[in-house]
Image (cartoon, helix red, strand yellow):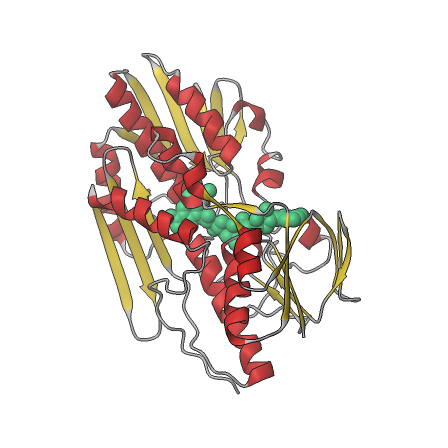
Length: 386
Ligand SMILES: Cc1cc2nc3c(=O)[nH]c(=O)nc-3n(C[C@H](O)[C@H](O)[C@H](O)COP(=O)(O)OP(=O)(O)OC[C@H]3O[C@@H](n4cnc5c(N)ncnc54)[C@H](O)[C@@H]3O)c2cc1C
């Protein structure tokens, strides 16, 4: 059986490793670069707590060790009707396709009017640009961090706001840090437990961060940010995460629905219309609105379990995608866990220095194992094959 995996991120590599563990299928991964980045630790670049080389590994080497083909190429076209993929190094065909191309961060950021006046705290380049601006802060500086409407991950924004406050304090610079949250409840507002946002807001306010609740970025100008409700805030340094969708290349293959993500069934992550296609990670619909690395790995686990059941009769557990956000914020950190299945709800909200090291350690683990980390502290998802 010929398996093709598009994208060597958290989801794509997890799928490849698990398939290799249970099968001798012909597995190939196609991805832009053999150097893969563990991006959840990028905020630590702002404080020099990690170096760029600590965030990356060579996926070609790791794949080869496991007898998985790795093709370094740009994917230019997906043709689900003919089971074909067009790339910068030629065409590939497949029996089973896993699409794990991540979210269209850059494509969507470039659609925000005035995006050139802001950084995007998602890519390495975005973080390096932001770091340079934060290094040059002077008295009176106003830093704004926020998200566009329907942006599926605010955790990085919380961390960038905390780090900006820390850097000002450390350098003795007088300034303001503004953090906008899409929810009117504030930080972690979408979690259906009001005490969480109340406690989190208190923590951020104690750190001197001004929370602008219920605001989504609509437009950016040289010296200000304009929100969807047409209010605005003046800011010198601006960093924004856009709304998200699957990449255009996936959309143009008609694999998405009105959500703009790959139209998959839950919990199998199998495409609704194409039975030999799975959509994973940030590219696909998910059980929870947040799009995270942990969620991406769980989607890959579930998708591979589905295929293994269908072609090998192997039954493995399914997992629930929840929310696990470990935050670093300069000289202090925090954690939010909200995991739920039919039987259990697990909630943790805590702040403390211990999470600074915990996050760094977990990131080292992810890099050293090249994302071969099959345990995500996730709850099971009750599902039985019919
Ligand atoms: C600063 C920051 C902090 C974060 N913190 C957390 C956290 O604490 N916890 C958490 O769980 N998540 C966190 N996330 C979110 C997490 O990083 C993403 O959800 C995760 O990257 C999604 O994984 P993925 O495998 O779906 O996609 P990706 O990791 O984006 O992988 C997609 C891969 O596809 C490749 N690709 C894309 N298009 C093409 C193409 N046309 N041709 C060839 N290759 C292509 C890319 O190069 C990439 O290698 C954070 C993200 C950021 C930026």
